[in-house]
Image (cartoon, rainbow, N blue to C red; front, side, top):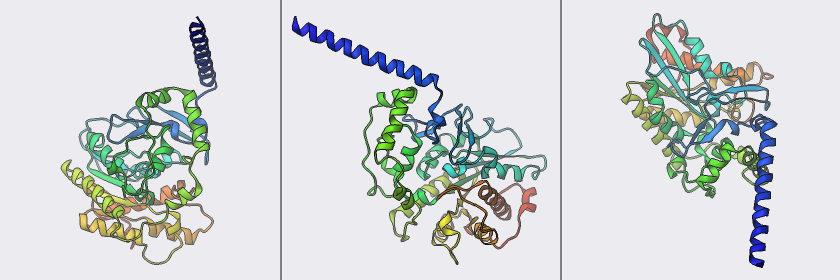
Length: 377
């Protein structure tokens, strides 16, 4: 009899907890989406069914007010861009841009991103041929995700030119960036995603049921926000600063890993009949140094070995920083302002035109500056 009383009390307690959680979930939903809270994690969803691990949530449309008020709209295919036809329409030259939150356009409107600006620069310069530039950038991605996205989704867009954007934090343990872009730890991240598998944080194992629940529950998402704030999963300043320190030594495994992934992308692009180039995107620490930059030099060396072009906007960024010292080119340690995106787009178009990687009529866009990309075609 006493045992039945305990079971009844336990059942009532569980019912009360469930009812309380349900009521809290309803109240939170009535207060609106948590994705307007100042970060981008609500725009992303884990994809354990895909080798690229996670992506942007199709149809998401939110306004985030940090570092400035920006609207982020994700198309039904899961990218921050217009929707493009598949298969590719006739007489269309397509450029696919792969990258992380720089290409995605953190902190700027979609119309201010360098992929969109490249498309605008090229508009009207291909005669009766149409040029389309597709932005497949996803926050937190590194060359592993970019390669897998190209393999799984990118090829369906039938690109004629594949551009991959390099960021200095591509060479670091990616879990900080992955975790910041998803509601939960991804878990079971393959070793191939780590530039140096020996340098990686301990991964938390989260059950698939909990992951699915947290993707649909506002309450779970809010609790995860709190957990992020209370644990080292929050973006500590020293973690972020470490991600802008160049990886030294050409013999380091991070550089070999990067070269291997770019070589696979180049080979995949060639198999699709497309050309391939790497954008060596600069970062603020490089702007006020003099002489050749070791990171850009190493990227050019890798490009020469792989026989692909390395696009380098750094000289123009340095010139702009000298000429206009009060003009902000970056929002933080990595992400360019709208002005930074504009500078990058102008130089990328010029260097592609000079290297004849675009339709013939675009050759007039070659500025003929001494900053033309080094690499190898």
